[in-house]
Image (cartoon, rainbow over the protein chains, first blue to last red):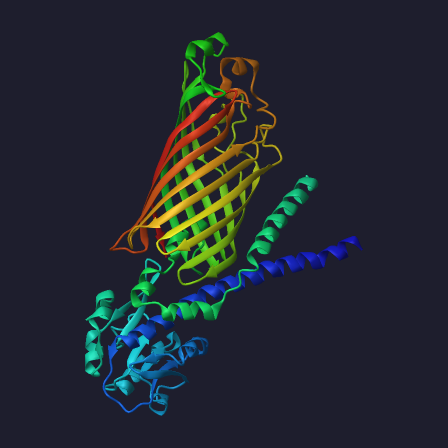
Length: 178
Length: 345
């Protein structure tokens, strides 16, 4: 009887450790996502956008639903005089429907980058991702870890092709890949 | 034996429950964090990040990644003392010690392999090959071979990650296996020359670390608890190690660290069953009570990440004692240094 009484206490103890550990790793992931979102907001601010009749500045996320949900926190802020809205995409073709101006491409879409870039070709849409060698594969801004800090690479060629112009302030703190 | 195990279990529970009780109110305020980041300038976002490179003393690796570390180390002991005072060779002779120790040099080649199991658990295996040379007044002695092997788990109990600041609690649980051989023949070696404890020892520790920008600081408390007696009939005393550290990420490649380490060793329980009267009267190194009981050391270290090979790091450590308290007659530590190479893959 004495032994039976003790067992639940042991399990509660184990569950407490695992729960705290899960919470702690989740908070690290969320911190990293938040940092990326804050930087994307800065990228949009330091981009010279071509004139358009869009009412909103639309930030889209291709894949990565949790990242999109965090991105919703930017709604209401302004870039280039326009209020930010946020959309979640499942296919790249939804870019046109939602009039995206900034798109974050999740890692799970790495194998589809070729078709994504051919669809976006010539469109003034800022492409951002954390996929390895994203800028070498045709993307504009790539998140990279350097000394375990969040940094980013920029492909000037990719941005110039679409008529977008990035501020020198952004270029100074980035690693330029071409 | 079972009472000892119960006591250890109770201690671990108490330490970890206390840690959980302390950190539970520190809930992650996600929306506040993102708001503060979006209000920050581009420079603040880039310069103000807490870097996980500063977590080095916590030994937590990314999931499914390995770290291999090879670290040659030299430790020099000398300047024999009686309690806190120097003692001259003539005085030792007057006490009958005609073969008292004068210096001990320890050269170790430390090997460490770490593996990150998941976000909150890393495991580590430490072992070394060592050579010990003891210079006595009339007879020099040496010993070499594999030391004890430690298998350790580092469990992340809690981490609160903010933009500028990150703090963590890590529980260390491990075991030291008696892979070093203990002299048990007709000519047993003095305690100073033994390569290991000869016992299975439990290792329990708790660490706290805080990162902010390019700085981090933390504290670690650890205890080693030997179990049972070794084949020679004795066991080393408990060892408590308390450490505080301050790290600076001086550049993207260079991490500089300083630590203060306080160590307390309890007395050896029992003595070597093969020591004879002749040994005991010839040198104080055969008496278990003659040892460093308390020490406080300052450690300076640097870790340099190679630019061409970013997964490879070179490390350097120098340790100098600030204070040492000897129980009875014994050598004191003079300095220790190590150079190392580690690779993450």
